[in-house]
Image 1: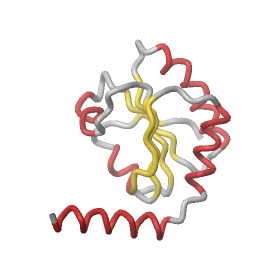
Image 2 (image 1 turned 90 degrees about the horizontal axis):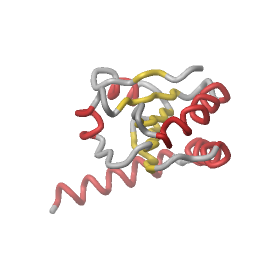
Image 3 (image 1 turned 30 degrees about the horizontal axis):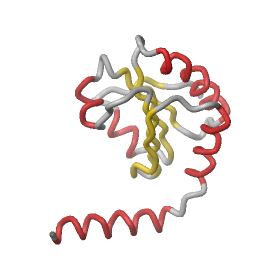
Image 4 (image 1 turned 120 degrees about the vertical axis):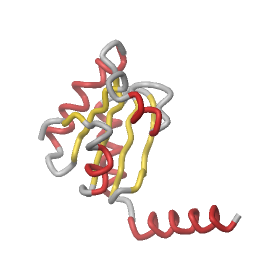
Length: 125
């Protein structure tokens, strides 16, 4: 599968309606972003069951601000609509494959429980 451009209009629906979504926040002027792009594209071809999205931080400044992007490239991963990974910087192919394997191996029942507990603690204070 190829990567798809995500916008403020499509971002939330894409994250919520797919099991695993990897998002590359990038900009055309960013050298490390251009270096990471072929790694991200190749991974998308190797993992057709995962949605690989790209957010152009110049075109989608409000979305980048909402996602609290302060450095690019930044890779975010969502599983079942929950943010499970966020890291700035370019990754080599082997590291990206490790991230994907870790995301696939997550116990989402534990993750949902942790999120619920954290939300409960936040609303109780």
